[in-house]
Structures are given as structure tokens and as C-alpha cells.
Image 1 (cartoon, rainbow, N blue to C red):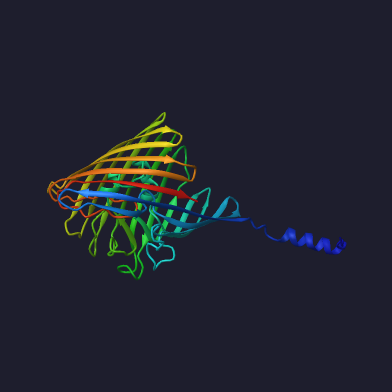
Image 2: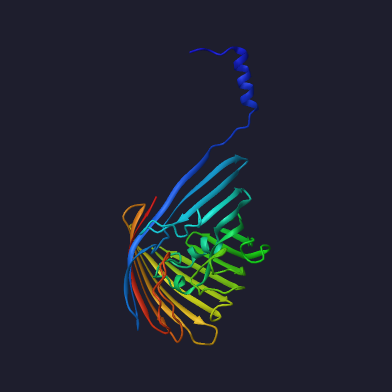
Length: 361
């Protein structure tokens, strides 16, 4: 091996000492595949059995990465696209990444994010509301509630956690393709306490984008299509407490959505119980009651059951079942996480059961 001269070695060492130290970046490819089938029937209408994607989890793939830039600071990004595991088609072919596309910075101060991202209510609070994280046909909260689940042009701040207590805030700015093109079209704030067996969270959101619910900046789940100038106000609160292998859940949701065919204004109350039968088996029972505050008596109630069996750390089988009793003009249906339920006649009962396989990578 040829040795370097004293002068050359000294120059190289001096350059190395003077050059900044670049930390390593990490990039991860990840995804979830959820395929299955569901049977649903309603009083006074036809029944159907369908192959469905996303009965429990939305099928998606994504990339996330982080760079350590020193002094405890990290630059983070995440890109995520949803697609159908049944056909392979993108949920929205017009977008390269229709679920997440944000860049942010984290450190001792907490974390900030900029871009298309999940709202704190959807990303965090739902995990405190029921055993399914408000997913599948088994969850009354999934079938009864409207919620803005993600926003374009989002700016969010997540505080550090102190003794289990943290807070999360988000605003979303309009752009030229949505409404006036300036100002704040959405905001959301929540607080959470998660320590030991107790998890409690509560949050409020308001979205007043003119195109809300119509495929614009916001994606709404569970509610009717909104007209121009719609305003959605939502307050959610959830709490759960673990006692050994058992966990009890309580949840409350209230909303009003203007400029709909009929002004939506209702409250939802839910109680749930989950039990870890074995390291591989989890069974959950959920009951929810919807109270119509418009005075029309369009109330509804649901009983749901979710059974999950882990084949491995990455793969699980699940069965979800639900029964909804609608009253007067209520016509709530059983929807999966990534598909809509059958149309239900006003005041008709509906029931359904679905089976699926989930694999994470």
C-alpha cells in the first residue's frame, strides 16, 4: 500500500476537521394491504356480497425519512398513496401521493409539519375513542360521524410529551383552487393524556372551505356531501382504561354541518369493551347511540363486533359485524374504512358482516 506523504496526510486531516459532519439519513418503504369481502342487507332493499379493499385499514404504500442535522434536530418527511388492493388502481389517479406529502422539523421543542397531512383528530384522537380506532363496519363512530381526516396546505405543531400530557394544533390555508385563495380554511386543536392504563383525549375542529366535502382541500368521512360555503364543526372526546387483559372505552362526538340537503346536527355516545383472549386474539364489542338534535327524531343506534387474530407480527385475519337500527328519516349505513356501505332506505335497519386479511410491510 502506498503511504501518503506527511504534507498530504496533514492537508487531508485539516480538511476533514474543517468540514461539517453530515449525519446519516434514513428512508423507509412501508405499506398496508387489506382485502376481503362483505355481506350487507337492509330491510326493504336488496342484499349484496362484495369484494372490498380496506375493510379495517386503508390499503396504501409510502415512504418516510429522517435526517439528523445535529443539536437534537431532525428533518422529517412522509409521502403516502392509497390504492385498491382488489384492482391495483390508485384511489385518486390524479395525485402522486393523495394521503400524505409533508416536510417537517422535530427536536426538543416538539415537531412542526408542512403540507398534506392527517388532522390531529384523525391521526391521534380516534385511537382513544374505540378499540378499532374508529374503523370498520363494527364501529358506530365510523358509521355515524363526519370528520375532516386530512388537509392540503396544512401547518401543524405537536408539543413534547410531559408526564403523558401533550397537545397538537393544526391550521390549513386556502389556495387559488379552493375558495378565495387566502386565509385559514381549517383549524384543529386537541389535548391528550396517555399514561399507564389510562388514555384520554379531546379535540375540536372547524372547516369552512367552500369546497369542503366536494373533493377539494378536505376529505370528510361519515357525513353527507356539503354544498358551497359549508361549515363543519366537530368536537370529539374519548377515554379508555385497561384492567389486565380488558380495556373499557367511552367516547362522545358532536357535530353540525351546514349547507347540506338537511342541516346535520347530532350527538353520538359510544361504550366499548375489548378483551385480549390470548397473545394472538383480540375481541371487541361496541355500542353507539346517535341523537338527532334537529328535532326530527332521526335517531339511530348500532351494535358492532370485531374479532382479530394475528397470524404473525405483520399479518392478521379479522371479522367485523354490525347492526344499525335507523329511525324516521335516518339512513345510516355500514361502511368499511376505505369503502362505502350500501344505500339504506330511510328508517330501515341494516346488518352486515365482513372478513378480511391484513398484511403490513
